[in-house]
Amino acid sequence: MENLITELVFIPAPGVGHIMSTIQIAKLLVTRDHHLSITVLLINPPPTFGSCSAVTTYIQSLAKTKMDRISFIDLPQDKTPPVSNVPMAALTNCINNHCKYVRKIVANKMSQPGSARVAGFVVDMFCTGMIDVANEFNIPTYVFFTSNAGFLRFKLYIQTLYDYENQDIVVLSNSDSTIHVPSFVKPVPTKVFPSVFQTLEGLDFVLGSARRLRKAKAIIVNTFFELETHAIKSFSEDFTIPMVYPVGPILNLEGCSLKASGNDEIITWLDSQPLSSVVFLCFGSTGSFDEVQVKEIANGLERSGHRFLWSLRRPPKDKRTRAPSDYEDLGTVLPEGFLERTAKIGKVTGWVPQVDVLAHGAVGGFVSHCGWNSLLESLWFGVPSAAWPIDAEQQINAFEMVVELGLALEIKLDHKDFCNQKANKVVVTAEEIENGVRRLMKDNKVRTEVKEMREKSIAAVAEGGSSYASVGRLILDFKRNLL
Ligand SMILES: O=c1ccn([C@@H]2O[C@H](COP(=O)(O)OP(=O)(O)O[C@H]3O[C@H](CO)[C@@H](O)[C@H](O)[C@H]3O)[C@@H](O)[C@H]2O)c(=O)[nH]1
Image: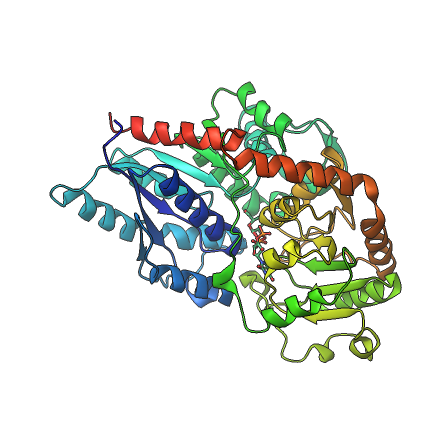
């Protein structure tokens, strides 16, 4: 078993929050075991899916990259138009249209004389349609879940409620109540359910995806035992859930491939700021706000009097596509005179080198949309965050960090999905932002807890740590498939 080359096929989803951690776990696996070899199949969706330029550049750079025992294959771009109004369903559909290319590549790989046998597919949580392709070749599939264990268990639990307990999930999601979810100790308010659960079309997509997750041989989760102890333990209550491997935090600490011009200027600006004095605002790869909200943020920041670094991005013209862009002239969207008045204490910019910013000593707090990678990165660098979720599963992430674990403060927990046309649009007021920023920059309890979790996150991936051990078990699992 030890000396066999174990070949894995990786299929990441083409989003920044997905592809970067998938590539990182691939790198980690080949570093941990010199008999592992990985082929990454890259899906490059057509521009109609609004993949942001950062991810396109990243995918293109990967396709040209040479790494020991990791090779990249760019799949042909499938231009079939989207068939769903639910953005995540449309993306999943687009991904599934690539099954035919994956089938061809795997068939070709397996027919080569002397080629290594494929021990497993490792597919993103949005690529579970590929499980059927893997099954055609009798290859087990592992799902790489780029979000957290709490949300994974939540998703599977909601599917159980629907499939076996006859619960009307759409009604539940639109209600104002709380429910018990096995992954959380505290009752979960239905108002933090992802808005995709609020419509039949959205629910249909989520349930399908949860049912497919159960078909995987195992689920690899970007989390660690010390952070989500209760959530991770809760999987054992349902024996129909595949084996779960917590392997995180898996982070792209180089972040270099996404660096844009202007990054040096940001770091130089931070160099000139006092220690822990700057509040950093960034809303992930797809976060953006309309003009009314932008003005509230600007006023809130100005009123707080704190130094700030604000990554501000322009919403896409077609909201279904999700990908924001950088403003050519920030003055057109900010309140009159804001840039001049705050020139000495603040910096407004577009895409930022987030990891480098969070690593910088001048940053004392992070206003975040609660994308899972951002939360893991802020814990890794010991920077406390204030939650302002806007999309996807971010409300659940925010609930977990603020209410369940006490590892973040709140700006607004139930700010509804910006992409969902039907959601009530909530404007977060300048006053809420001002107060949230003030609490964030002075709160000592959360700051202390976050610093402690930083140590635990570093220990989890170090030799002897919980995630280190879990990765070891995962590698054995891959190898056993070849026996
Ligand atoms: O200006 C920016 C914005 C983002 N990032 C990086 O991009 C990644 C963003 O990932 P994440 O924080 O997870 O946010 P999203 O891009 O919004 O990620 C999607 O995927 C995540 C993982 O599944 C989910 O938790 C989110 O809800 C979903 O929106 C992070 O590594 C950031 O460091 C930058 O470097 N610069």
